[in-house]
Image (tube, rainbow, N blue to C red; front, side, top):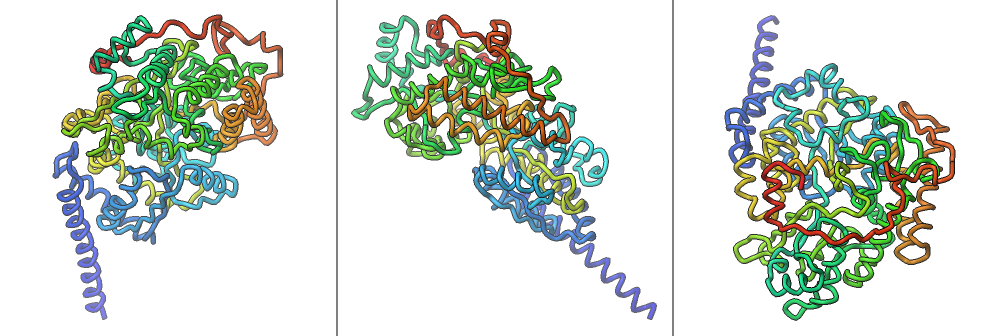
Length: 576
C-alpha cells in the first residue's frame, strides 16, 4: 500500500514538473516568435515569464482555471484579446475570455455592477475618466494597498510602476493608485504638412493675414487657416479642400467631443495639471483638496455655462458649419475619424492619436510613396481664455480596474493577466501594434526611434513633457456615467440651432447640478458633492480665476509656429 502511494506521489510530482517545463517551453516559443522587440533581453523576458508561470500554478491549485475581462474595441485591445490572451493561456495554463465591446457598453456594464455590488467581470479596462467615480463609491480596489497587502504575492517584482507614464491620471485624491494604465492616446492638432509647406500657399496666406502659415498657437490662427483653405484655396488637385473637420450628430459620441477637454482648450478651467483647481475642465468647482464637488453653474462658482464655455461651444458650431464638409454635422465620432485620411482635409483641431495606425497605411492619399506621412500632429491651439499652466488637451488612459468585493482568487488571476499585457516582456510589441504607449522605457527604445519618421510626431510628443499636459477627466467629476450622458443631448440642440450656445450650456450646467444634488442626498462612500448655494453669477465671474469674466476681444491676432521649431522644443524637453 505504501509503495503504491509513493508511486502516485512521484507521478504527481512528475506531472507538475512536466507542466512547469511545458509552460517554460511555451514562454520561450512566444518570446522568440511574438514578444520582440522588447526592452528586456530574452533571458530577462524568460525570468519574468517564469514568475507568471509560478504565480499562476498557485492560483490553479486554488481552482482558478478561467477568468473573464472586458475592454473597449480599439487596435491595442484587439491585440490583447486575440494574441496576448492566447499567449497567457499557453504560458500560464489559465484561460482568459477577453471581451471587446463599445466604450459606452463598458461604462454601462460597470455601472450595473457597481449598483448591484456584483462584478460581471473579473477585471475591467475602464477609462481613467472614471477615477473620481471609482474613488467616491468605494467599490473599486485600491491597487496601492493591494500590491502591498493581499495582492503582494500576485504582484510581479518587475512591474516597475514608476515606468508607467499615466499613473498621475489614475491616482485618487487620497494619493493611492486605483487603476493600472494599459493604453493611452491624446487628442492633438492634425495638419497636412505638405500643403503648409507649399510656397504658393504660404505667400497667399501671408499676404492676406500678415503672419506665416504654420501650426496655429491660438484659435484665431486656426480659424484664419480654416477660412483660408475652405474659402480661398477651395481645391487641391481638382478636389475640394476643407480647412476643418468635425462631427455633430446627436449621438453619445458627441458628448466625448466635449467632455474630452474641448472647454479646457478654450481656457474654461483654472490653472493646474492634471486638471484645473479648483475648477476643472468640465466646469465643476471642487473644494481646495479636490475632494468635494461644489457645483457646475456659474451661480455656484462653476464654469460650465461661463463665457469661456459658451465661446467654446459657439466656435465648435460655427467652424463645423462654415469650414467642414457639409456631411460633418450628421456624422458620429466613428464615421468622422477616417475622413482626414481621404486627403481633402487641411487641418483638424481635435484629432485622436488612436487613429495614427489608420493614417499611415500604404497607398493612402495622405501617405508618401516611401511610407512617410504627408501629415503631422502637434499640440492643439489654445482659445483666448487659456493661460500658461492650464491643461492643454485631453488624453485617454484605458486602465485596469478591479472590484474590491470580488472573489479574491479570480481577482488575483485577472491582476496577473493585467500585469502580463502591460509587462516589459510584452509591452513594446503591443505599443508597436496599437501605437498607444504606456511605458517610458518603450517610448525611449530604439524600436520607437526607428519608427518615428513614419508616425508624424507621435514619438516626439510622447518623449516630451507635453504628454502630461494632455490629461483625462479629473477627480472633480463625482459620477462619470451619470454626468457624461448629459453633454451630448445639450450640445446637439446647439448644433441644430434649437437653442443658442448660452441656453444649451445653461441647461447643461443646471442638469449637472441636479445630478450632483441627488448624489449629495444619496451620499457616497467618500467625498460626496456638497453644492454651494446659488448666488448672483457676478459674484463669481473674475479675471483672477475660473469662472473667467467675458473678454472684450475673443479674437486676438493669430499666432503660428513653424513645425520644425515645435519639434525642436519637444526634443529640448519643453511642452511647446
